[in-house]
Length: 338
Image 1 (cartoon, rainbow, N blue to C red):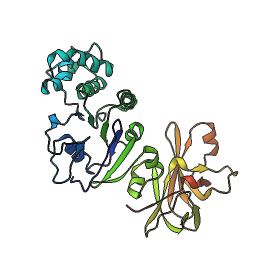
Image 2: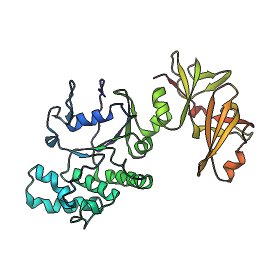
Image 3: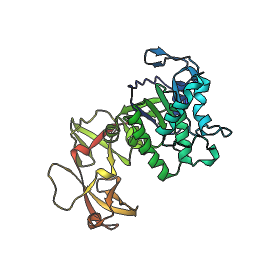
């Protein structure tokens, strides 16, 4: 995928994720940063140094690949110290650096293990130690957790985030998993068709997306067409909705509703909230929550989530029953078409 006028500035010590669907340009972007793909225009600077055409081994960049790219014929110690060999670091410094790298990823004592003797999580740690042993100024990670099972992946997300804070490393992390990006990152850049659609903190991206693409890609959002009525109001059919954020101008606008933002009314609510009347279409039990699909009286469908505990079940309606849901003006988000 060709990139189109992509510009990204990352602060020292920052963890930035590049998130987007397949074919959005994530891999090309990472390849250009790592020196594996040559750009046809533009430049790349690491601090004050122009590295646009520098070979990968001279970029002072550590890389953790999707498949880890570990050498199966080498043990853990030889894999981790390989970057030191490639950079002609004096061998007298290897032992201390290796010991520090193994301790950093909690694999002390594993130096003589063979790669086939390690679990998926341990191999991921070896790849991370190899990327960090020469203390690079920047670490690139290309979906390094995608091969792990769900439980281990979530554990490693927390460990990587803690390790980032401990090392104060600068990390650019490529993923297609939005939950992973939101969990780990200081900022997230959403890519679409070779461009950065929006870059912001996880909270801002989720709660205040820039357009319909970002809104539909982040979280569990439904887009409903609305008409702008004023700077802070929009009409969904005959229902007027108030927002605390400016309602954009444009011919095609959408109300972006996240399922967790909708609240089932118990009959007592603040008069300032937006009220939507609907009918329950279906319910879906999903363990920790119950997803409720509703059809609005004004037209269109939404879903909301109720906790599967006693409080949530008390508000649960059956298919065919009327239901009133509330949307706070703080959670009423209107976005333009991408």
